[in-house]
Length: 190
Image (cartoon, rainbow, N blue to C red; front, side):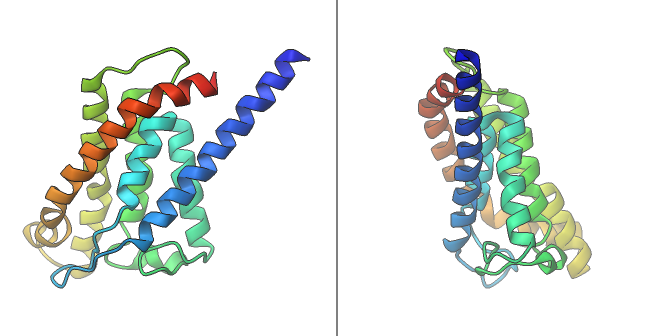
């Protein structure tokens, strides 16, 4: 009986955290700064996607971003521009959406799932954060290049280079948050 209660409690916490990080990723779309020289706005979605992997691990972190993507795909207005639908994947910036999923998965794989009483080395958190942010750009820049029929230099100039400083700042925030919260999440997940 005691084990059943503990298992249910753990599952409830896991589902709550997945829903929370899906909601945070969705909220990140409402803070968007359009750039006149790029079809890609500055958003906070990538920060929350990377944090999902850092704090929840690869399975729950990718699950949170997957839930966000499914909700947006079926039409909830949680993609850039406060709109939704599968057509967003066809836009020039549509490659960044699966990039968010890959970011959570990558960051989570590098740091691993949080465990009770286990501390994660700072170097591993930094590596996971940098890798997570960079992984977003693989499908994002590739999609820009394909849709805009531009060179790799053009795609990088409009879809990667303008975001480096902002992503470094977001990365520092992610490392600081992860350093403080990862052990708490692990202790609560058992």
